[in-house]
Length: 180
Image (cartoon, rainbow, N blue to C red; front, side):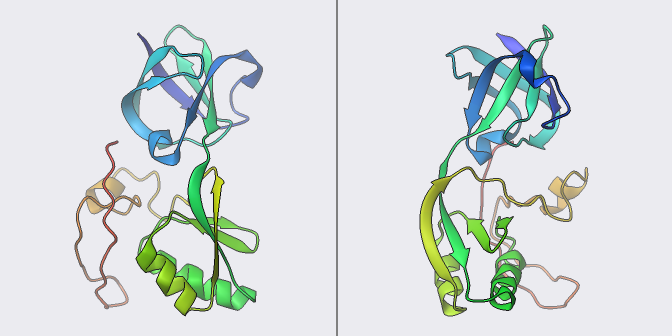
């Protein structure tokens, strides 16, 4: 089985050289090491030095020099809208304050379904629409930092816990468990 040894962001690799592709949801695009099946049915071993949040159009270089194209698979999401930009900003603040992954769009926020977060958003005056679309949440302030996984600010929390933040108010985290 061939190993994938390097990741390149979209436009920073020779996309016309892609010999195959991988269509993956967000969780499987945010990995370091995992066996994956390409869209043509071949198996490859993703073997990167650290976990990377891959996006649609990114390239992966195989150990033999060939390239794979990354496709973002559609996932069931909730699109959040509000009557005005201030209201949507307030909703975004509350979603972010709970360390909940969100994709920020022009005039909307996309999140994964979660009945508690959805109820909070409706209570803040937001409107919700379910849809299937690729999910590429924001990386956050700690994205890419080596210490991010140690403190848990990479957007994935392995256990529910409370801790003090700079603003002094403790709050809970929505548990997310993902293998990277």
